[in-house]
Amino acid sequence: MMNRMDTSPKVFVIVLNKDGKECLPACLEGIFHLSYSNLEVVVVDNASRDGSLEDAKARFSRAHFILNSENLGFAAGMNVGIRYAMAQGAQYVWLLNNDAVPGRDALAVLILVAENAKAPALISPLVLDSFGKTWFAAGRIDYLRMRAVHVAPEANGNEPYETEYLSGCALFLPRKGVEQVGLLDEKYFLYYEDADFSLRACKAGFKLLVAPKSVVVHSERSESGSEKVYWLVRSGIRFFRLHTPIVLRPWVMSYLMLRKVKNALDVYRGKSGADRIARAYADSARED
Image (cartoon, rainbow, N blue to C red):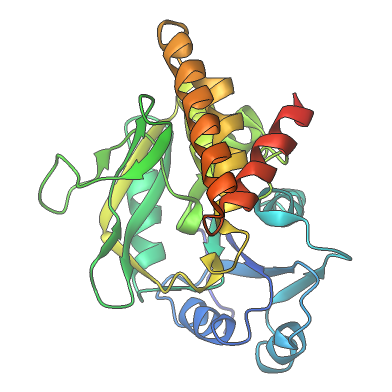
């Protein structure tokens, strides 16, 4: 007897990996145990050196693997997977960190929310940390302090709700979102590419929703390392130069100058990490 054709939307789950030997297996195990079955898994590897790609190929042969010749960063690395998914006819694309593990019904809930939304939407699940505490439930752009911050949602209960921006940790995109908004901005090597994409999507008419019934656990292992502060500063400067409302731009430029002065003093005093921040300011200036 022939199986009935699966008419549910085709989803491509894209996992970006960089030296994720300790976390990638749990991520892929979670994906392959999802209750939603009409999906393809794409692992994009940013030139890992820890054997994580080879291990994943041996254990998860159902996945598609794309090896980049160098570390392209988050935005460019994910874009490799997005292009592949779009070429293969994806109706939805789910971007997932390699240190994130989805709950069994996480994807099914995202599909349900997307298909029943009154307007086209980008969606994030509720993201918990490895201790069960909320890591991302809503986001706010703080222009006065030049930060994109995670905040407690104004809404309560289990219904989807809107937010100012979505985290890229587990970002769920409809095909139309990619077609109309474009790809992630590859000038962000790490950080703020999600906030940038969110604001661009809003301008294109998309809603930004969090679906609290969809749950992902994020261990944050991909965010460790000495370069985190460097990229937070550099990417943050680019984001606020591009997206700050005109009325707030004089303040943002003044605030940025004060931060640079403080950093110069920190470098002079030998404060730990100050040299990386100074390098971020210098490299950002050369990018202009």
